[in-house]
Length: 211
Image 1 (cartoon, rainbow, N blue to C red):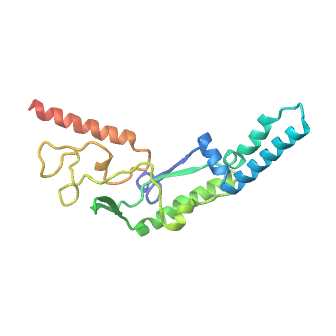
Image 2 (image 1 turned 45 degrees about the horizontal axis):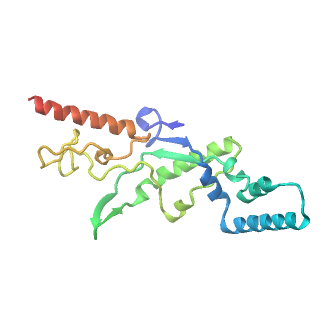
Image 3 (image 1 turned 90 degrees about the vertical axis):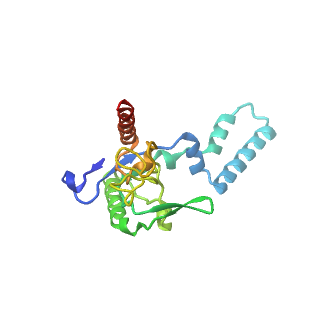
């Protein structure tokens, strides 16, 4: 579901809402916390013990094992929503003691995140569901599946690391052609945008050899 940008007839910075799913092994991880799993295992052992004591000819191992792993109702009746947005890219990455450190104040994007959550809440209500925010958001922690930036493009070396062709300022012959050169999120999944930038950079390099 696409919420348009101000320039596309919408308001503010646009975003996409995408539906996701759970791999089967995640179903079990979500369903079976330690307490629930212990209860199911104990019930399974008691049933197997009773079968042996009663010398029952009926084999119900399959059904009993199914009871251990659970029915997966929580994950089967829930729909994860992904917000692919264009939050304000005002963070700074740096190396500190040999580790990558991200300094990013999310305050500039708070109103934007509220709008994304509000839209998801309205969507959930329309579908007859109950909306639950990501628990990490209460700790001011966000998850990204498409990390971008680090060596962003800019109009000069004061604004960025590379120019619009991925050529590193001050380092002739050195180019960067991956997601790190993007100055901010593009809203949609960025793989094709990254590929287009890399293709453009490659054409520039080839043209340089032809000269």
